[in-house]
Length: 280
Image: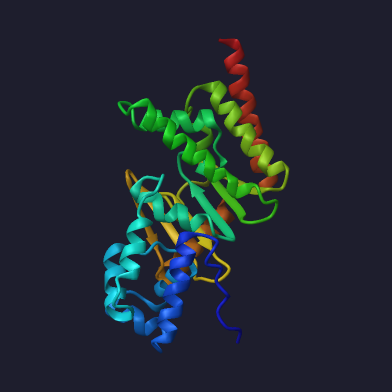
C-alpha cells in the first residue's frame, strides 16, 4: 500500500500548516485517529487538515498546540489564515474547491459560480444584497470571477454540473444577461471543458428537491460534500453521509437529459432570450 502523498508546503499557507501538522503528529508517534480523538473529529478530518483540503479552526489549533507543540505554532499561524475574500459560510468550501480534482454540482436556481459571467454574477449579488455598498458588490463579483480560474487547466478539475431547468428559466439580470450567461455555459461544454446536464421540470419529483449539492474529490484526501442554504453552508466529511450524497447525485444524473440534449435545450433558451430582447 503506498504511503501518504508528499506534501508541498510552498503550494499554499494551508498546505504549509498541514505539512507541519503531519510532521509533528508523526514525530509524536500518533495516528490520525489518535490525534482526532481529543479534538472530537475523525481521523479522516485530520487527514484533510494535513492535505490542506480543510481549514484549521482556531480552537482546533489551540488544542493541537497543547498536544503537539508548546510554542503556540498552530494558533499563531491559523489566526493569520482566517481572513478570506469569500463569505464566511462559503470560505472553507471555496478553499477545498480550489484543490479538488473533481467537482460535481447540482444547481437548483443559479448557474454554478465558476460558470458565471461577470454580468450574471453582478445581478446575483445585487439582487441578493440590494442595500449593500457598491464596493462590497464589486468585491464579491471579483472573488467569484477569480474562482473561474479553476477551469484554466484544460483537464483538471473535472467539472460536471447538473442544472435544474429553473436555472435556465429564472431571468437573472435581464434577457441579454441570461442569453450571454447561457451561451458561456454552452461554450465551456462544447469545448469539452465541462459536462453539463439539465434536469427538466418533466422529471418531476427527484432526490434533491430540498436544495443544491456540491461534491468534491481530491487526489490525497477523502471526498467532501457541500450543502448551501440562504446565507448558510456546511461541509460534510462523514464517509457514510458523503456516499449518500454521491448516490443522490448519481440518481439526479440518471433523471437528467443527456449532455447533447441538455446543450440543445440551453442553446434554445439562450436563443429565446436573445430574440425576446431584440423585439423589445
